[in-house]
Length: 197
Image (cartoon, rainbow, N blue to C red; front, top):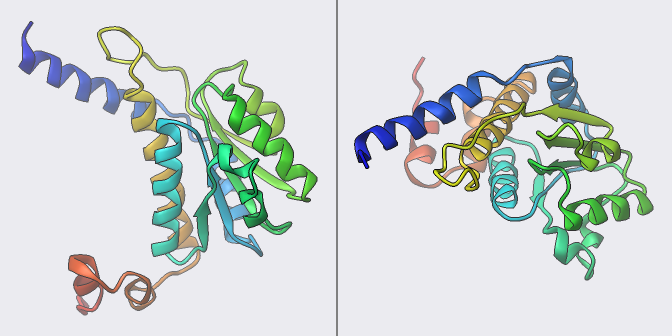
């Protein structure tokens, strides 16, 4: 095995998968839906997609959009109380077939949630049917030697979430000062306080 070649192949596969994403009108609609949200953004996902969803919520919070992560398994045990009628749900699932996520989305409809954005890849994804707006990740091959470890798909999912968060931040006109108020600690907090104009 040539380790250097394998490292380069993985990075190339992930970069190509990100560049292959087809940015449709649905992506713009998603940003506008998030911008006009009167409640908060609730992100969800299970497994590695759940980690991306949690990170997306954290990025939204630091860029002036109230957001929280809801674990789909915990939603059935009372955490669904986090969800309000004016919230927007953003559900992450490559296959769109994760039972925990699908059940949670059905439950959110019972509490009156009107807007669900699904981020998924598989054409036969059940998540597509439960979503009001679908952001298609496209079909990709995982560079894992077994074809199983989700790396290219997670890179795409993470890139889409970053693109949404940063486009939303710009659409809302978030200033350096506003950013600094929400992210005042560490290197980024110090950088936000520096006037680079």
